[in-house]
Image 1 (cartoon, rainbow over the protein chains, first blue to last red):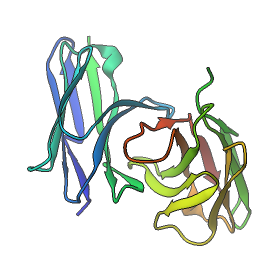
Image 2 (tube, helix red, strand yellow):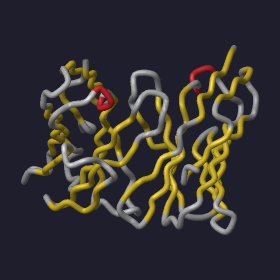
Image 3 (cartoon, chains in turn brown, yellow):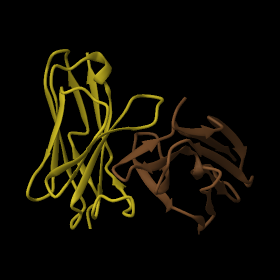
Image 4 (tube, helix red, strand yellow):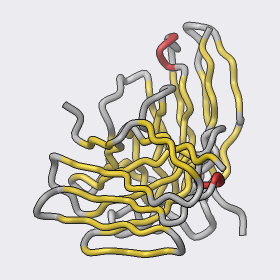
Length: 108
Length: 114
């Protein structure tokens, strides 16, 4: 079993829909990242959080340390949101452990 | 200000050869981490360097090695290449390499081993 699990693996949505991507982890962590990867490979950091909730534009990330769970929400989704979204956790302060990613496609 | 840069962008090698990948961090960042991303999977941690010292190593064979230079740029070396080494190699830099610092990723080097 992977130390970081994401669901769903694939997600399709119509433009304007509210989207939720989930991340569960089984190790102790000090922080969690949500990352976005576009075709071609480039990775952009969306959020880094260790508690509570963060919001940036149409993106919201939450984390529940007790339940070892985080969610990434996208409100009013748009085709340009189509990408792979990756959850990664800092374990033992010296390495990031990544989930396998959620591939999101938003259709007009 | 330039982001993290990596070179080359693409590389094709044959089995048994050796390869060197290069990474330049964001100005002021002292930590560089290397990751391997095989097609369809999430990245896997290879190394982290901070202030020219190795701070962490992932579960990779000794064929993989890295170093960090006084200007904080870094090289990843892979010897005796195998087909399974074909992947996107990502470099990320951060201010101090701790979990409190956001990591900024480069565009990656896509290595194909034939």
